[in-house]
Length: 487
Image 1 (cartoon, helix red, strand yellow):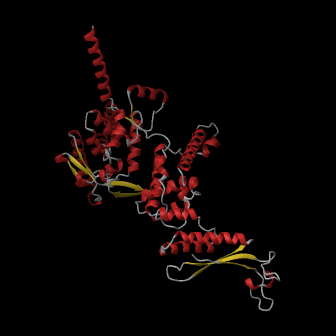
Image 2 (cartoon, rainbow, N blue to C red):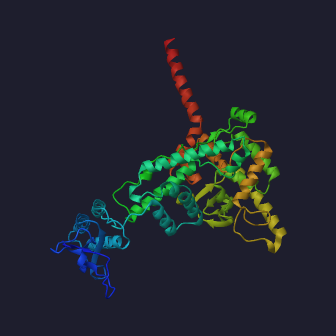
Image 3 (tube, rainbow, N blue to C red):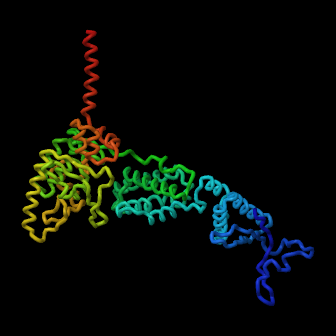
C-alpha cells in the first residue's frame, strides 16, 4: 500500500520573484527545525494507481488545520485503495473516485459504501439522487410518446418533488409511503377547496383534480421500473426495490352494477356509487336503441364495444382487412392512440392484446349494415374519400378521434336519461355479461386481451351474482333436506 506523506505549506510569495514559496517558506519551521504551529496549513500527498490510460497520478489535498486531520484523511484514502486488493481494475476505479473528489473539493467516498459495492460487484461511481437519476433515466428511455409523457408526468409532478433529494440507494419504503400520504393530504385539500362557498377558494383549484388510486398505482409502477433499471445497470446494488414493498392508496376500483334500486337512488340524489359502473342488460339495450336512432354513425362501434369488449383505441383502429363477417370474426392487431392532438396507429398495449374476436349473429348484422352505409358514403365522396384502411370511419372517411367518440357517447347517455357510465365501462359490461352467462373465465380473459386470467377473475367475479345465488340456494336446500328428514 502506498505510504504517502504529510507536509506543511502556506500562501506566501517570494518577495523577489513573486512566486509562491510553497513548503519552503522560512516561517513554516521554527529555529529548531520543527513545524511552526502558527503559520501555514497541513497537506498530504499520495501516489494513486495509474489511470486507465497508464498515466501516473498524485493526490494532493491541503488546507488542514492540524497534522491529525491531514493524517486522518490520508488514512481514509489508503483504506479505500486497500479495499481493491490486487484487483487492478478496481484499484483504478477507486483512484478515479478519489481523484474526482479532490478535483471537486468533495469528501472522499465512504469506505463501507465502497466495500459493499465491491462485494456486490457493482459500479463504484457515486450513487445519484433520485432526482438526478430519474432525469437521466427519462432521457434515455426508448418508449412510445404516450408512455414517455406518462412517465414524465409522474416524475415531474410527484416523484422528484417528494423524493428527489434522497440518494437513490438510500430510498426506503417509508419515504415512498410518506409521498403517498402527502398526495392523500393534497387530495383532501383540493376536494375541500372545490366544495368551498368562497369563489376565490374554488378558483384556486379550478382545473386541478385529485390524484386517484389508479394514478397512484401508475406512479408506483413508474418508480418500480426506474429502480429495476438502476439495479440492472448496477447503478445501485444489494438492495430490494423499495417500490415493490409499498401498497398504493386505495384498492383498484371494482365494477358496480346499476341495479334498479341504485338507479332510483341516483335519480333522487344524483350520487354515483363508484368510478366504475356497469349497466344491466335492460339499460344497455335502452342505450343502444337510443344510439341507433340519434347517432347512427357511431352506433355500430358502440354495439361492438358493448358486445365484445374491445378498448376504445382498438375499436377506432380496427382494420378493414381484419373484419371477416362471413366467418363471424375479427382480429384486433391495431389501435389508434392520441399523442397530444396527434393520432397515432400502433399495435395493442400487450402481446395478449393481439387477439381474434368471435362475433355473434346480431353483431354481424349490425356491422354488415354499417358496411353498406359506409359504401354509400364512399361512393358519394368519390376521389375525396381517404384510404385509411380502417373499418370504422367518419361519414367523410376520416378516422374517428378517440376523444370525439367519448364525447359523443357521454352526450348520448345524458340525452337518454340513463345512469352515467364511462365509455370504457362498456368493456366492463361486456365482460360481466359474458361471465354471468356462464362463459369460462379463460375465454373472457382472451376476449378482453388480458395478460393473465387472474386479472379477469379479480376484476369481474365480484359483480357476477349468478354463482353466489346458486351457492345460497344450495345451502338453503341442504338445510331444508335435513329438516325434512328429521320432521
